[in-house]
Image (cartoon, rainbow, N blue to C red; front, side, top):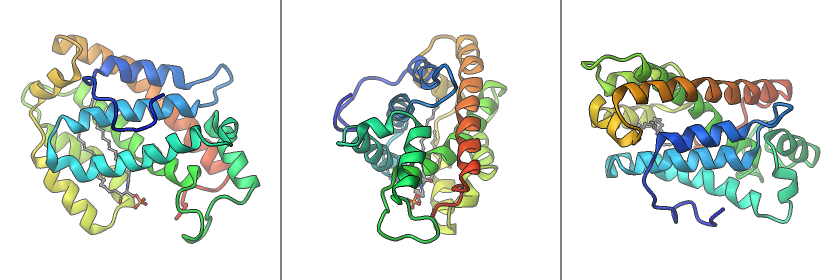
Length: 218
Ligand SMILES: CCCCCCCCCCCCC/C=C/[C@@H](O)[C@H](COP(=O)(O)O)NC(=O)CCCCCCCCCCCCCCC
């Protein structure tokens, strides 16, 4: 894995996202952090093709991915093999700010929770793209998915900025082209494969965080 999140400038391909989320799940349904992070790195590439208006979103995603990459190559890397082992290690060793922000602003648990919440947005957005028609507006699909998921965790100013950026999203056809898969039918088919995987990773993570009562980390 490259050290820097931004060092990889290959073209985005939805197939890669599918491949990384497929690799995420172990036989006993644990989530490999390395592949989870790789999935996000791939998604950030997509975001980076959309131009500077999306820079503030990309910057935040990159910084969170970078925190996890650093943990994955730290001296405690073996504790970060799966999301399950990360949660156990960080909680057992009091490495997480549980009630208010304090000395662990870059814990793996907190950082991953932000990406986990964004994963629900991604799932909803990809599903609405999958079932969209030629005249659907990506800006509306994106805003609907955002309002139904991530928005509730963001303050007004972030919601406002996100809403303004969505208006500048490319149309459905351009979107499908950036996915770099083939015909619209092929894109729809691949989305149909990717969404259940993303959903499974989301559900497993959600259940784990709920079990440890860490769904509201500051
Ligand atoms: C394709 C259009 C992309 C639209 C992205 C929709 C999500 C909008 C998120 C707006 C986040 C604004 C930036 C700031 C966020 C932070 O305040 C906030 C809280 O963090 P904190 O507790 O450390 O302060 N951060 C977050 O919630 C994490 C946001 C992570 C967003 C990642 C978005 C990646 C988008 C990838 C697009 C891929 C599209 C794929 C299509 C095939």
